[in-house]
Length: 79
Picture 1: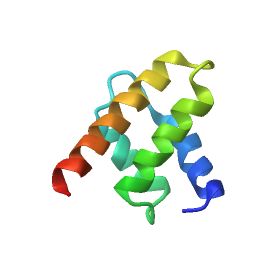
Picture 2: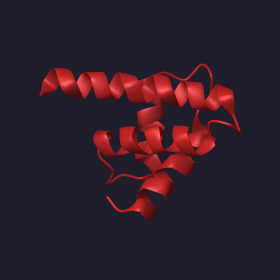
Picture 3: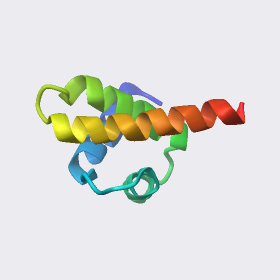
Picture 4: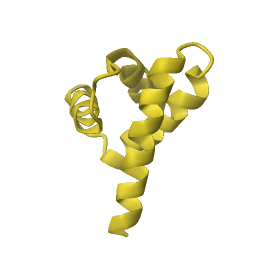
């Protein structure tokens, strides 16, 4: 996945994430706008977005962090 695609998915995540959103709902919302993105790509974009936007919106960054860590942990368990 190139940096432009990563940025686009990260922007989508920042736009759609809400405090009450579950990781599954966030993944579904991201896949709706980026159907070719894998779960791994979306998790990477979440980490990228956290780093890029942490100082701008702490609440959204916290939600993305929870999602990214949950996905990363889940992927590690499957390996």
